[in-house]
Image (tube, rainbow, N blue to C red):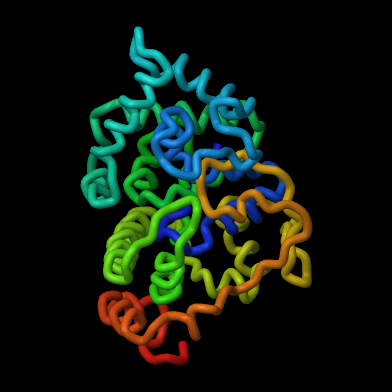
Length: 301
């Protein structure tokens, strides 16, 4: 069983990429699996509905997955809620800043066992050969090679930090706002951590720019499908649209609730809408990664 883990920073198109991939046979996208216990079980985070529209505790899919995880990874005597709280505490030792340490040695707590149990439960319930996890925690991606029965594949998805900053400045119902400084600092750290995972797994990784994905989605999907060894049809039509069905995603962009024929389009509003001061701040803070990822420094990029 393969797990395709999407790394990078938020607002880079990971939900869209995952949902498009899930329209290929034998592939399932589970969204940001890391937040299943915080958002789905404890209801402590934001955006706690499954992609099917139900709360995770009422969703038949996640109910079955959680039951199996409890059987395999729960310490004796723990309730579902107690185990979820313990999982969230374990995750604190496996955050993005720990990526380099995790690449050397996995944490000694119960998080690796729980994550592995979740992947195996998802594979059993869905019958999928490839699970797409868009959690974007490079520290979790760094764990995959240590999990029994799992082959890791890695997509480092990156987007222009000025577009990301503009997205974070806009209020959204499902999550809070971030300043340009905060967003770009996280963009830098999360992408550096993603690079570390990519270097550790060079033959099983690729870097994909959001801009390349939306400008030629069929070609981008071909590359990702090839990475996971998928020989089935590309779900993206010649006109750049995709037919989206249902999904069981944990948190993520609200576009995960979309259904039907959907165009894959670039959101370029930030070019005109991002104030000059924020644009300059994001540009300066993102150096030198801007050049490394092929982004320009000026207004026309």
